[in-house]
Length: 234
Image (cartoon, rainbow, N blue to C red; front, side, top):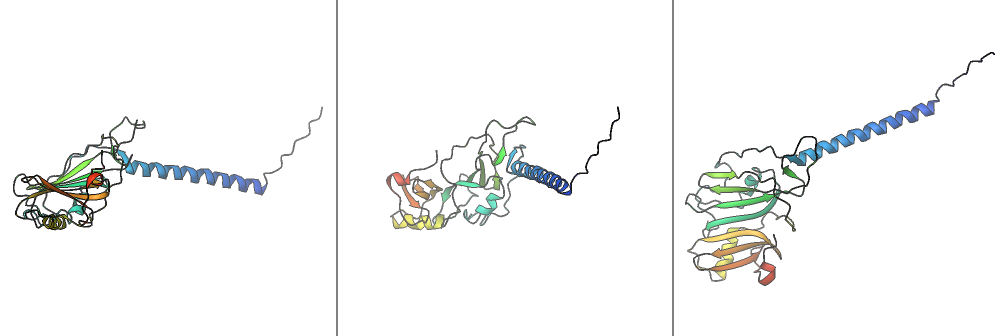
């Protein structure tokens, strides 16, 4: 029996071109997946347990006698990896809207969280996915020692049901002016908080010595009453 050789036609140019395009598509998709993976690691990474730095007066406007909490907000943001402002608390606020933190008991605090799955996350075993995403929380404070961050609380769940607070459009000075117009004596020290009320961003003014309070909308002008003045955070 005579076997004739089988001739194999060379691969057509169009088929080779299609194969190259296919490989390019697969390669591009692979690189895109890698980029997304690295981006996700950047915004949602296990907490490394970093120890916050020591207190410093750098960046604190008016330190220590007349701290301006609104002007110092951006400096407070630099001390945390969490981007969402959740509140500002001031203790011992004089009628010019500033705080003398050199006096014991007079403090300023900023609270920050992250969106779900963003920011530092609790440590989990390498090569595994976290069981859930956390929002965490970190407080930044100003005392007589300066400004400093508390240890980050990476394992706190996402309990926020409202949007983060915008940077304030007014400040404690304007809040005090409104309080004086409402008959509050200007020779005492107040406790003031910036928070999210049912009506939106708001300021709460309190005179502890007289048990008097006032809640204003975020413009420091309109008074909030009843349900609209309630705290909207859990």
